[in-house]
Image (tube, rainbow, N blue to C red; front, side, top):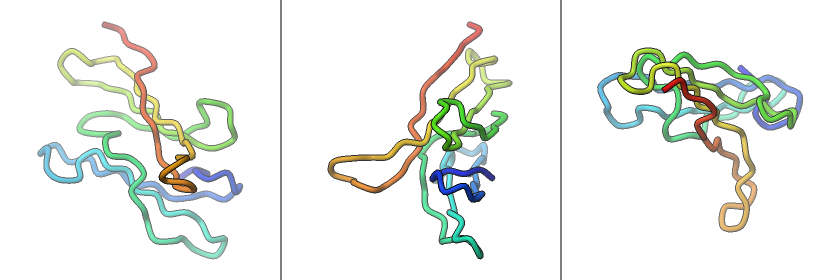
Length: 109
């Protein structure tokens, strides 16, 4: 749970974490709070929190909107890496849509 749209209400996030590299692996789905329930979930990310990654929610860019962080544990060559997906507003051709944009923030390699 986290506030992914800045309305000061907790929203719900679900991660597709299977290890089979099948369709949808790594997707993050968010259901925004309506105040009395939740809207239908929408896909906000195509690749975050997969396999053995440990994920958490927090405001990592200090914009008062929650983001996602994924810590890689057992992946060959990526053990100890951390990836942050910050919430961003998509502009231009997709005005008003929201999504997570990921980037590597640290590495122990």
